[in-house]
Amino acid sequence: MKYLLTGGTGYIGSHTVVELLELGHEVVILDNLANSSVKVLERVEKICGKRPAFVEGNICNRDDLDKVFTAHQIEAVVHFAGLKAVGESNQIPLSYYHNNVSGSVTLFQAMSDHNVKKLVFSSSATVYGENNVSPLDESMPTSATNPYGQTKLMIENILVDLAKSDSDWSIINLRYFNPIGAHASGLIGENPNGIPNNLLPYVAQVAVGRLAELNVFGDDYDTPDGTGVRDYIHVVDLAQGHVKALEKIDAHNGCHAINLGTGNGTSVLQIVESFKRVSGRDIPFKIAPRRAGDIATVFAHADKAAKALNWQAKLDLNAMIEDTWRWQSNNPNGYE
Image 1 (cartoon, rainbow, N blue to C red):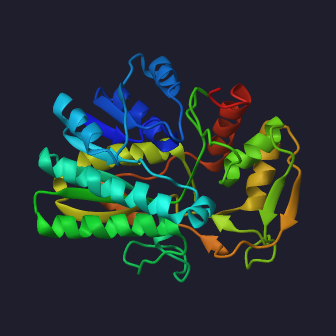
Image 2: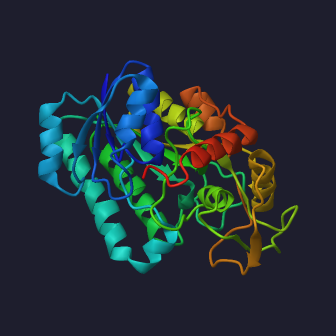
């Protein structure tokens, strides 16, 4: 099978590329490299012994999309491309709506015109908003509290309407929780631009000396140690979830939302202590005020993925931390 991965040189995309190549599939990546590095292609080749086709381009540019679909016999698309920082989305919301929503509509139009109607969309647990109680399941009402989450929810709604309008579409919206970890080789991992927005790369950069200390936002939540609890999932498990979705997509006409999570929660301080133990490094931190919109506890109900995709997370927290530290310690400055 030949798959197009938009945003395929990014964190989750690159790990999915590896899983697909190792199964013998052909992969074409379309990426504008706004939040990733072309050096990923060399690293993927070292892991797999082969390099995916790469096109530098933008989902907002219809010409870029037409060139890819004309040059390659694409059978399905995995759509990762998008801006993804919650805080930044509050500062530049129009950029998020333009890139994520308008760009996605342009992609879906191109897919339709080229008769490629199988899609796995990279959605997010942010679509559950802040009023649902964990474990979060796919039948719960959706909402969003920031522009980033709004873009994910808007795209999901667009895809529901698209599938209703044309029964040829097979769409799976994968709502994932908190991806962490890295490939066991240490060759690819999370490499955010600037100051990391997510907990694990921030902790890893403190451990390696790039950042001075970690801010822990709130220690007075109704959780075992007062800090926020989240469902952390290994990025390799997540990548394999996308592979399973592609394998099952022919059996799922219409549009379906499926959680990818472990079903377990881990607190911020538990992450810090685990990272200290694995790395042998101190992780200085200070308690900061809660952030607006943060929720005490968020974790997945993951039964639907097991039933519909024959998928479940396999790698435990220790593996997530070990692989994160291997990546960061081997690549203290990321891909640069």
